[in-house]
Length: 237
Image (cartoon, rainbow, N blue to C red; front, side, top):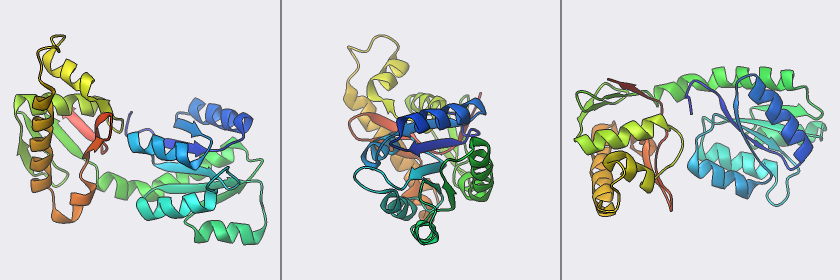
């Protein structure tokens, strides 16, 4: 995933509308994932980072207002667009009170939606970029933090970060990491080596970043899958 591309999660249970909007938005360069309810959204967001969430209000199960409220609590810099057939002023006010940044009534022209997305992203982008500028200097085996602090890496740590950087924002499986580290000879590779290496690398990052940013450290485990680096990282030879 390119961190220059705006990544959107569209939560809409109307399949035709979902397909139409996602197609139009993808045609103009957005990265769009679609789901039909809050539970499926949560599963997607465990594995991938998004800049914008587009939520229908009348979803099955948890409604869009409740989802917006908890998303804003969990991720204050996430942009939230409410997309609904309800145009009453009281409903709009509820949307804004629950964390919506913008409110559009169906049927919505995809060009209007795109303009709202661009405007919203410009508002949230400075915070996002400030928190997520890392550099991996491959030849020197050094990771540079956004504050220009340097972290010395072992060869294995550097390889792990290289693969995570190639898939930034998405979970990479332990199997894929082992194959990248050790080529095709994976049978003789003890998975505990990977876990120990990852643990040490995460501790290095944790010990180096500013204390106020530790909760948002970019290198995280994804339960049952592998690992993710969820902030922008530039790899330099």
